[in-house]
Structures are given as C-alpha cells and as structure tokens.
Length: 432
Ligand code: CMC
Image (cartoon, rainbow, N blue to C red):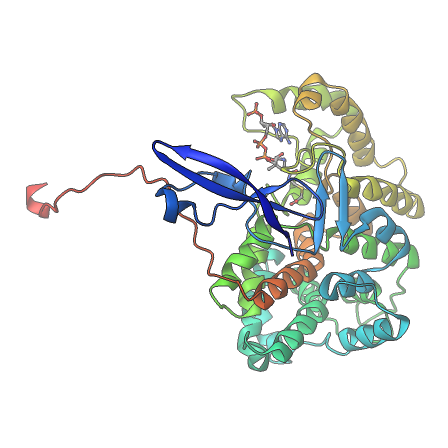
C-alpha cells in the first residue's frame, strides 16, 4: 500500500481551491491523488497515452527509466536472468516472494501437470487457415479457453482464480507451439513432463515424430532467459488492457486474450518481428546511414524498430542481457559472423553516438536483440510475438489477480475531452 498522504498540492480554478493529496510510493515519483477532482472542481484531467497518469497501485514490478532499472518484486532483472529461471520467476511474480525448495518443487509439478490441452481443442486449431499468423491463432485459442475450462471462470472464487492462473502459465507454451506446428503443417506435438518449461517448449516446436529431437541445454537456457526478461513490465499497453478488460468482471481467459491482441501491435510486442525485418532490409553495414537518416525525417513514418521506449530513457536493462545471450547462441550455432548481428551491432554503435538519438534518449530496447536469437534458433519472424505473449502471460495474470483481490477495484472508465458537434436536430433523409 502507498503511504497515507500527509502532504497535498493546491489547485486553484477561478474562485475554487482544491487540495490534492500527495501519495508516496515505495520507489519512484510521488503521485497526486485526483480522484475527488471532478466532484470538487467539475474538471477532468487530460492525459492521452497516460504519460503522467498512474492507473493503479501495484507492488509487482518497478521500472526506473532514467537509471535503466527493472525490478520484479524488488529483485533486479539482471540478477534473476543470471541466477534464477522462468518458473521460479513466475512464482515470485504471482506470489510475491521467492519460493522455498519445497514450494518451488510443488509449483513446478503443478504447472508441468497442466500443460496438456483439452483434446477437443485440436479441432479448434484445425478451423484456422493454415496461413494464419500464429498470433491470430494464439489470440483466438486463448479466448476459447473460457469455452473449455468453465470451472475456472468465476472470478469471485479465489480457488478458481488460482486454477485459471496455473492453467494459463502451463498451457500457453502448448498453445503457442501448436499455433506454430499448425501454421507450418507439422503434427501437433504433445508436451513432455520430463523436460523443463523452456526445453519442453522447444521440444513441442521443433520435434517431429520421425526422428529424435534433443534439446540443446544452451538453447533452452537462452529460451528461458527470453521468457524471464519478458515476464512482466508494469503497466504497459497490454497489461493495462488486461486490467481494463478484467475491471468489468470478464473471465481471466477473455482478459488474457485481450492482452494478446494488444501485444500484437508493432509499437509493442510486434516490435521484435519488425526489428528483425528492418535489420534484414538494411542488409549490409554500409546502408545503415541511409536508414538512420530516414528515421529522423519528419516526413517519413519510418522508425528504427527496437529503439526507444516510453519509460526507459537510458539503456533497457533487458537489452543488455539479450545482447550477451545473442552472442552465446550465435557462437554455439557457429554463426558469429551472422550479417544481421553485424548490422545490429553497428547500427547500435552509430545510433548511440548520433545527436538525434542522444537528445531524444533513444536506446536499444529488449526487442532489438531478441529477434536475432529467435531467428538463430530456427523460429520464423511470425513466432516472435507469440513467444513474447507466452512469457508475458504470467505478468498479465499476476497483475489481473492483484487487481481482482483489491477491495477498492472499480470498473476502468476514462473520461474524455469532447470536441464533436454540439446539440443539433435530426433531419429526414429526403431533406439532407
Ligand atoms: N526511431 C526514430 N525516432 C524515434 C523512435 C525510433 N524508434 N522512437 C521515438 N522516436 C522519436 C519520435 O519521432 C519523437 O520525436 P519528436 O519528439 O521529434 O516528435 C520522439 O522520439 C518521442 O517519441 P514518441 O513516439 O513520442 O515516444 P513514445 O514514448 O510515445 O513511444 C515507442 C515509445 C516505443 C512507441 C517508440 O519509441 C517507438 O515507436 N519505437 C519503435 C518501436 C519499438 O521498438 N517498440 C518496442 C518497445 S519495447 C517492447 C515493449 O515494451 O513492447
């Protein structure tokens, strides 16, 4: 809980003076409590894109954009990426503390035992066109979970919320892998309980019935890191979408499907796909200046994909870990002289010393290097955003659970600055 306000700011509007309590977070800037503003002052605030508005209280994830710091429940992301693993991070995000060995074992067993999908769901996959984007399939199938798992859709029942949580974390890898299998015309591969979360995902994506597929531990570790780095990111667009959908009382599967839909956009999760396409389009190091120039041209909508962030005005801490992982993976696969990586490294160097990028504080973000790793592992670009969705599901569900358990939860309902026509009378069609 934020500390009770013992300070306030005063706002004067004409003759009226309004006291706005100042709330103190445990980290980060103070927050003005404007909840009574409309009632007392008959005015709204205007903040499209929520650039200065805290939409909720949360104790899950903290970002310091100036320092380039990301904490999950207080733990720095680089420490977690180095020393922990995804399912432990899931436990931390969902329940607030790192688990004991026994708690972790129980949680891992529970998640592992829920990875299968209802068999009838295979028909659902087959209903999609083969050439459908896997993100479209994931969005549809996650939404359809509410039609298959009725016994975990009552949001007022804490046990059902818990069951839905485990189902979502456990089944997303299967859904994403099956979207890929279906999209590429392969058989749907069932999960294997003897593999860990990331290795099982690679197995479901890449194994075929006609030969044995051995998961390389360096690749499964890299996959696990990608999951960990994408697990949560406070009130970003898709998380806010999940919260807004959930605030009406919608069931968890419908809310997470809404988050998947929002994540798809190129300004958000779709940026990893767009970043790799851009690096490939640039192709060679000598063409970089041309693209840098394009990205700075006000009359050109082109942006350097994988650069810039609403909150980070310094190096995205996730991009640092991603860059190291990219090197490890490419070394293992013997493609250190990968031309895309060369373009990426050179582009980063040039952009970081360019006055435009320095002045606007535009640094590489998490999506700049993740595409290179996923591409080297053998994933097509269309799979990049579904993999992000898989990893972010735990963040979405943690934030959704936090909101539902908050007794002060209200339906999210922003106001507007209306600029349309004032009153006018209807005119019959023959008189228009
Ligand atoms: N290339 C060139 N110029 C840029 C870029 C870029 N990638 N990003 C921002 N700018 C410029 C922008 O033109 C604007 O200039 P001006 O002030 O002269 O109008 C200024 O920087 C501020 O940009 P903004 O769009 O107002 O900033 P924002 O906070 O609304 O947008 C962003 C953040 C991530 C949408 C944006 O930086 C962007 O479009 N980046 C490329 C897409 C991308 O990589 N997205 C992934 C984000 S990280 C993963 C995730 O969380 O989903």
